Each structure stands twice: as C-alpha cells, then as structure tokens.
Image (tube, rainbow, N blue to C red; front, side, top):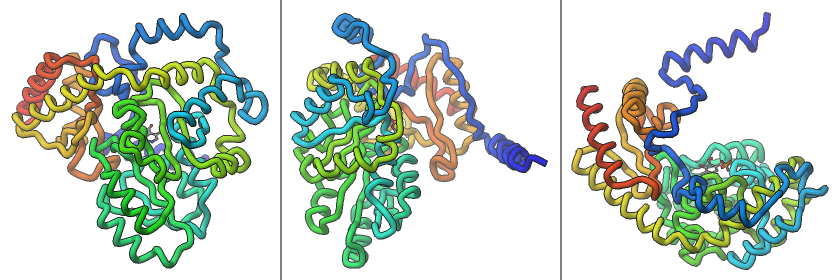
Amino acid sequence: MNMILERIKTELEQIKNNHNLRKLKSYPENLINLSSNDYLNLANDLDLRTEFYETYKNLSLSSSSSRLITGTFPLVLELENKLKEIYKKEALILNSGFEANCCIIETFCNKSTLIISDKLNHASIHDGIINSGAELIRYKHLDLEHLESILIKYTNQFDEILVISETVYSMDGDMVDLKKLVDLKKKYNFILMLDEAHSYAVYGYGLAYEFDLINYIDFLVIPLGKGGGSMGSYVLCDSIYKDYIINRGRKFIYTTALPPINIAWNLFLLDKIGQFSESREHLYELTKYAMDSINELNLKTISTTHIISIIIGNNQKIEILCQNLIAKGFLVYGVKEPTVPKGTARIRIGLNPSITKEQLNLFFKELKNELDALL
Ligand SMILES: Cc1ncc(COP(=O)(O)O)c(C=O)c1O
C-alpha cells in the first residue's frame, strides 16, 4: 500500500474540513485589487515598463548558469556596485527573499549559535533556522522588552547570538521599533539581521537606510517581490560575510542566477527608487483614510502601516466574506487559522497608489453590508 498517498489524503480532508484548503485561481483583471503587494504600483505601471523596454532591448531571459560559472553578467556587477554606493556596504544579489533568508541563516549559524527570532518572522527565516541546527528562542511579536529579558539571560551563555526581525510585518501590518532594536544591539552586542520585504520602496531605500542605521545591521535583506516591484533580493553586509556566502552559501552557489532582463529591471528601478514621492504621499494618505474608515465602522485592526488587517473571526466567516466581496468587484485576501492565531482570521488589505479614496469608500460600504449580513 502507498502510505504516503493514504497519509496526504487524510491530511487534505482535514484541511478542507477546517475551511483552509488552498487552491490556485486567477481572477478577472477588472477587480479592484486590494490584495496586491505591489505597494508603490511599480510592477503594474505601464509607463515605467514601456520606458524600461525602450532602454533595455534584447536582454536574455535566462542566465543559463550559476553566478559562479557564467551567471555574473556585467549588469549584475553594475547593480551590486550601485547598491554599494548607496548603502556603503557590500551587496550580493540572491534569487529571492526566501533564498536570501534561508541562505544567510543556514550558512552562518550552527549548533553553537543562539538565534532569537520574532515569533511572527517569515517562514523563510524559520526554515533557515531549522536547516542551521542552531538553538532557537522566539520572543513575543515586536516585544523588545521580552527580547531584552532573553538577552539578559543568555548573553553570557553563547558566543554567537543572532537576533532576527522584520521591519513591517505582513500579517499584522505593524512595525518594529528599529531604533530601540539597534539600542539593544549596542548594549548586548549581538549580530542583527533585518528583513525589509514590506518596507523597501514604501520608505525609500528601506527603514534602516532612512533612519541612518545601516551600520548596525549585520545582514540587511531586501526582497524585491513586493514594494520593490520585481523579483530577487539584495543582501547588504560586510565584505567578509559576502565572501563567505560566495564560498559556502549553498543557495547562492548551486542555483541558476536571475536572468539579465530581471537584473536590468532591478537596476532601472533602483535608479528611480528615491523618486515616486507623489505615489508615497498618496499611499500614506490612503492609509490614514482607511484607518479612519475602520474606526468609524468600529472594526478591529492592530495595523499601523499600508498593510491593514481587519480581524473578522473564524475561517468560515472569512471564506464567505471574501467570496462575496470578490463577487462585488473587490479582490481581497483572507488570512485564516492556523496562519494567524485562533479567532483572528482576517481580511488583509495591501494598499497601493493606484487605489482611489472613492474605491476605498465603496469597499468599506460593501464590507459593512457583508458583515451585517453575517451576524
Ligand atoms: C518578510 C518576508 N521575507 C521574505 C519573503 C520571501 O521573499 P520572496 O517572495 O522574494 O521569496 C516574504 C514573502 O514572500 C516575506 O513576507
């Protein structure tokens, strides 16, 4: 008997019974997309795309090899050099945020390392930790006092302590107090890794850069698939760390590098990322507007950024709510248990400057109608 088949059949049944079965779907293009991670609308901006294709012609769509064989095209070096000019740190491009997080953690940490990680850090961070075999302690989400209590207890017991945080969190839409985190680093002298997946572009070159804290971040990871409007990730670190990844990082060494067309797009956007101030202004305004609407409707959120999670309750409610809102023209994404704690299944909205206040008004009106109907 095929036991794998038996086991996964039962598991899929269970997932379905919990209203948690994931399915791949595509949606009509005319929906108002409130689920996108394209926070500055860079990926979707046709004028930008046209300008790009006019600037870069006939670039290859595959690099056909790893960076260490023939995958390091002049454009890649140009991009890494430009990053170095901006951040004043060595830069290395990896194929995705997932790979960058995993690669850094599993390459530098081992069983003599203590990793202290925010409880809500991304799956890629968690996978890297598992692969590394390091000791793991998770601190309460964004609770830097809890982090400090762990540091007090363990600083003298481990020679190597790595603390990992994200800047903006994708499920709760809240933000780390980066200055306070850096103060802790100054006090306890741990190695600090920061993931800017949800803050890059929204806050220019990222929060660490904007707060002038780059020097205190040992590993700065900038995944580009969200506000960065692209694909791949930048890792900013000291040159010795970069050399070590090039020599020991399995997820860097043993994979086909990003294609030149993608590298060129990253370069093109990096040149412009300091611009887009109007888009940013509009995004900040939309965020405030959405928060006011949420308050007026007495809805619950703990978000403070352009990612807004509206807590609804259980998986079944979320399923019905999202289906109905999609039918009314709004593409919204439900986050269910166990991805989020029991009783906090939610609608997650990712705002971007292509959305108008009028569209938000319509959305909140329909959301209210649907919630009333669910009671
Ligand atoms: C915080 C965070 N880090 C890393 C990743 C992975 O980045 P990528 O999509 O580039 O693999 C994601 C989500 O995709 C994320 O939310």
